[in-house]
Image (cartoon, rainbow, N blue to C red):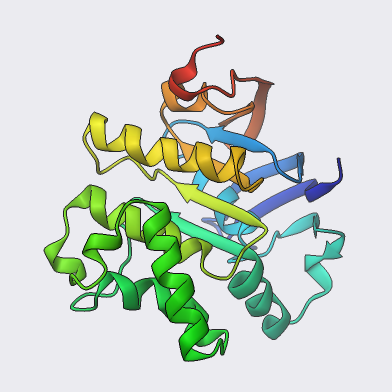
Length: 238
């Protein structure tokens, strides 16, 4: 199996050369294989969000190399990076980030609109994606009419709209009750098991991390541990 993500000695600093210079990630080596389901865990301030921004090509390393499907991210211009983000990375956030006063259908359609997909094709795909997450009956509801769990079940198909290579989920169950969070985690398992998607879960929850195939632990910007998870729903090793 080939690597979709390859970090080599990645370090990230802010306020470079200033008295308050801050080093958030230090000498990170990490490979993620195509079709893998992994979690990145750590307490607040461990560097998880910075790691997500780098993996999602929202930010660049200060030093070291990042290869995304063999593309050297450090050598790409801003337009090329925006194309990678638009077409190859799907983001799911704790705060959902849906367009307000816009229907679930239009929210899912939006990434395809920016990708210049024809109207009929993108509408059909949006309906299919909403059906996949059990939200077809809410397609015409505006986002402010949806519960938190329903919003997340719209955010996931929106992230999948352009058939990205990887799905980055940043604390996707953090704002949800446990029962609704279970539904959302099952959707990630389905995307991994049935669609073969590479899923990267950023979380502080060890319990959720146990459900992934591999658990990467960050502390103070260092990878301090890497081990196997169960890869099973609910964390069971059945």
